[in-house]
Length: 302
Length: 261
Image (cartoon, rainbow over all chains, first blue to last red; front, side, top):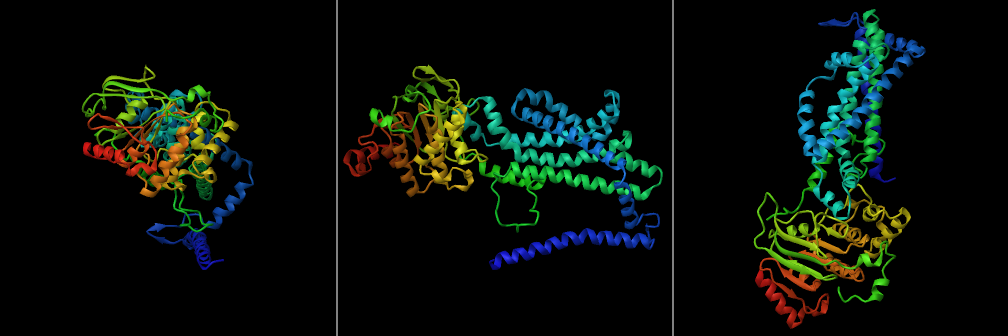
């Protein structure tokens, strides 16, 4: 092993240590503050301790209800988010590619977009026959706009040379769509999906709190109404873990399908989760650097 | 290229299309005014006939509308006035008959080198196995046999242009329109690419329109040289003969072309 790789190995072990130590330290401080009932303007007397929350979690994990709630929330997220992904990519592409779609959908999108998805609860109740569908509707509405807007931007930023190349090779409109537009826009689309999955979780939990019958959000709110504070924290921890899991899945998928993007290699030591290529910021910067390369060299007209 | 012998034609790799389809197209512009609908028109009507199998080079200063000419011939841009025809039929839209080779960065960056070369064959619905074999053969011909699985950004600029050549020629277009394809390459790579182009065009029978701002490149490659600024089309005394550079008639042509710029 060369000195350089030994050094990066050490760095990676060090960074891993920090990553584990940071949440442990946070838990330690939490435990101290709550077990000594500290009251320094912030009041920790009523706050459950880490140990209480952990034992509540241990109890809950053994029950069927916990897993049932988890399954309900996951299913709502999966259906709502997938719907949003399909609709958002389709609408975003249409708006970016067709003047008609831009004229018809553009104003509607801009008017509906600023409305928080959770404020659509009355609409969901009026429109949809069941609570379940309402929650999926809210989840979908939440993720739709980030996906739509980033798809629109990504499609507009495509290098026109790619499309012209495929056209002069005899490609049809459908060929251009599936061989140029969608693959070329994927880095931007995944930026939108990453944001969208986060917003989806916020809205599915809120919607469950308002109108759910099962689900992690519903259960957390129930625990609050019966003053079971450790239970509330179990709910929060569950939401955090699920959110982390699903956004990691989206990011991993995104990294995989955009593996063609030129990236600086060997900058991040192996073993450490690389500066996630799927995060919106880095996707934006990656596509920005790609589009910088893509800029047409010549103006076609004098 | 009109002097290609039949034996040279049969020496090429198994053609995925009928032999008749790979005969060169006749391209013509009749009183055409070039330009973008909402931009500035290129001055002067253009009348030009490019014979089947001919290699016509077009020289002119940067920004004089050479690219507009190619895009119009490709069918990407309708002429403001006049008619553009292929074998007498008006050109209305881009098609597989007329492949366009861009200055650079026209490969799809998410497709491997081989997948890029396979693209025109996939568009023509050539079966997968046949298309793979054909792409491999073309990559061998442009000297990139070992790079099939790489992504475009892993190649050098010259290598990428060789892949573009392979992609443009893989589906045996009847005309190839080249927009300063070697313009971004260094002088040494450029000479190698010119030799490669001559080599791989031999036997395709395709009509070629080659736009360049390099006078020596235009005189070396072309059967005829079109001077974009004046509209003159001059015959080249010794097309594609490297040793003819110092010949008096070549030197006279070179002076004439330089004077026109």
